[in-house]
Length: 333
Image 1 (tube, rainbow, N blue to C red):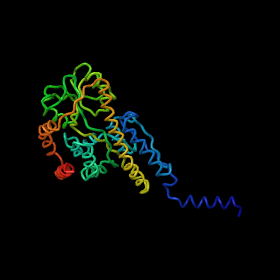
Image 2: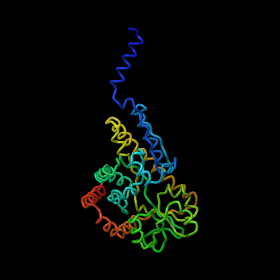
Image 3: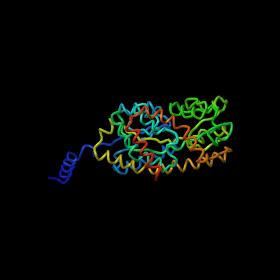
Image 4: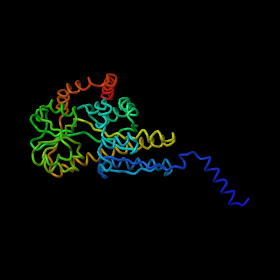
């Protein structure tokens, strides 16, 4: 037999012997809401690099930033339907399908990044993730979005009483609305796209968001005061379509899990550095910044406690018990 035929025969046998996944490239459409220079986008890029390396280039991630694949709800539906493979929305967006994700929206739950990581990476975060597969989603962990802080055009917020009477735009979320009502503010739910104009026209006095969002949307042009209230810690969650996940081999699933685990620390580091830089940039642009004293944060936590009790009563008691025990654990660390 000629050498060329032998080589061809060996190649044919190898093709039949190779597992199916070895012959199939995977293209993962990864959508999110943020700009390409946002820490979420940096997390996607690092995840893509790691996954490509682990899979020998067979698993490729195509990023779709800036709402290119729709808003959070549209992308969630696309994942559930198997049309889109991945996204990284704020955890808040999942409360509509697993209401216990609302536990993560409770005010003054954590005081530091270390506490936030311990809560999300520990038993509570994993118990929430375990509720997603029956909703058509698989989660590979949590990324950092940051602490939310209040800005306004009237005066610094140094104590709970300073919020009284202020019209504050909040995300359309019952926990946020009731929290600011507890501080005797006038919370105004409003689409984010309308916010700058409302601040400029004084239709609302202020708003609350992480520092990087405040900077990138130039709210400092129409808001003089930036107050470090740190009233809610916000996280993103790395989601995969369950239909897509179930089509993967165990090896592919392992690569994706490892890539997500390894990119998580990097994304958090980048996000927190960006938040610190954003605060400095805001001050350089003329924003007047003040941190809230721990004692006043404690007072705000006490004022908001009835809001937490009200919403906790609507959730699975087992999850609420776990939430409380985990908070006790991480606050001792």
